[in-house]
Every structure is written in structure tokens, then in C-alpha cells.
Amino acid sequence: MLQFLSLFNTIFNDAPQPWQLGFQDSAAPGFTGIVTLHNTIGFYLIVICFSVFWALFSIIYYYNTNKNPIAHKYLTHGTVVELVWTITPALILIAIAFPSFRLLYLMDEVISPTLTIKAVGHQWYWSYELSDGCYRFDSYMLPESDLELGQFRLLDVDNKLIVPVDCHIRLIVTGADVIHSYAVPSLGLKLDAVPGRLNQVSFLVERTGTFYGQCSEICGVWHGFMPIAIEAVSTPQFLIMGR
Amino acid sequence: MSESAETTSKYVLQTVGFDARFPNTNQTRNCFQNYTDYFKCITAKGEDFAPCKQFKKAYNSLCPNEWISKWDDQRENGTFPASLEP
Ligand SMILES: [Cu+2]
Image (tube, rainbow over all chains, first blue to last red; front, side, top):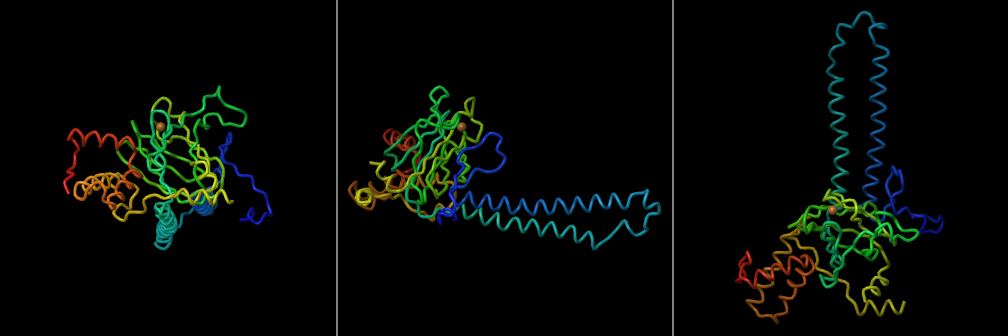
């Protein structure tokens, strides 16, 4: 939001970093939803961990046999406390389940797509079919010897998939030989490519840029060498390129 | 800008819409149904019948090219696994 007001210039991180622990920057509403859900649940997870461990350690510390040589006769049972520590976790699980299912079904929705892209996983490259199958190309990883300055090792490909921004895109994923998985973290995509089956997902790219992903189902010796690169361009530019 | 306006007028960016019969991630049947429906349609109404084109557009959008050519071969050899009689 702030970069649209030109108050701040934001540089997005669209490729994984060495020793990166966090997420890549989101470029699609679906992934923004995933990150928000993760952070919200993570916050309550820390609160719960601290309160449980604080209770546990303080009980061990204050009520050990040295400090309390005579045990309280009625301390072995407590109906109220047992009800509280059974029902509270159940309510917490419900509170996690609702936003998580909401996000799941929102991401499942296919909203009248502008174009369909078919991605087929092969051993060991991806091939794409665009404009109703009229245009087809293979996308191989660039070998290390062909890399130019600024290109990513094990991530850049010879033919990137070009998509327009701000368009609902239907992606149909299938496999040609074994199971692969089509995954692009910054777009919130991860979809199994199963031979004989067509899996569909809808996504929308919110900004221009190049987004990287890798095959995410172990598929053979070169499983790690069939990356995915998607370049998002503005719609007029996409139409010019399509000419 | 004028160039982009010109481009948009010449090229229509469209694809088959959402089909309420296939609301799930699995779209295998959507592709196959449209393929068989197209050939049922042209057997009944002839190749030039305009409404049949919708089925062809749909299966070309959804089915991988490899599947289409495999099914085309099967139809020629008479080994296509479904009935194409209308
Ligand atoms: Cu693979």
C-alpha cells in the first residue's frame, strides 16, 4: 500500500537467499493470505508456549518435594482445572480451523479466468502450452556454464513462462511420466503434477517481476534441476509479446 | 498507449469459463467430457454447426496436446474408450 503512495520505495525479494529463514515477498493475494495466517497462528503459538511452560516450570519449582514435604490430600484431582485445560485447547483449535478453511476455500475458487496455461512436468523439465495449445515450449534449467551475471544458479531457465499481471490465470498441471509438483512460493502455488490427471489452480500476479520455484515432488535423479521461472509483465506488454 | 489499444482490439484474451459441473481441483473429467461432447456434437449436427465450436475451444484450453493427439489416434483406430454416438 505504502509504495503506491510513493512514500517508500520497496525492493522486493523475489528469489530465495542463502540461509533464508523467512518467506519470499508475496506477489499474489493467495500467498499474502498464507503468510498472514502463518503469522497470526505463530503469534498465538508463542503466547501459548510461554504460558504453558511458565505454568509447568513454576509448578515444578514451587511445589517440589523439598519445598512441600507434606502432600496436600486433595491435590491429585481437580475437575475445574481439567475442564479448563480440555475445553480451552479445543476452542483454540476451532479458532485456527476457521480462518484456515476460509483461506483454503478462497484459494480453491476459480474466478472467471482470462487465460489458461497448461504446465506439464517431464523428467526433467517443464513444458508449457498456451493459447489453447497453439503455442508450446519447453523450459529447461540453465546449466552453470551458461549463466550470465545476475542469473540464479539452479533457478533460471532458458524459456521463462510469461504471464500478464492483474489477470486471473487458470493453471492446469499434469505430469507426462512420473509425479512432479509445480511450486512457486511467492505466488502461493504448489500443485502436484500427476500423470493422467489434470489439477487446476487459479492465481493472480499483483506486480511485475520474475518469480522462481522448483519441482517439489521427488521425481528422479535430476529432480533438483527442473526449476520454474515465471515472468510477470503488464497486460499490454503481454499482448505485444504474444504477437 | 495507442499501440496497446490497437493490440487489445486485435487480440482477444479469453478462455473457457468456470464450469459448475467441475468445481474441484481435479479437471480431468472436464477435459474428457468436452472432448467427447465435441465429437458427439459434430456427428449429430455436422462439422459447421457453430455451437459445437464451444466444446472444441474448451477441450483445447483444458486438455494437454499430448492427450488430444492420443485420443485422435484412438478415434481413427476405433479404440477410443467411450461412445461418440450422440
Ligand atoms: Cu519433477
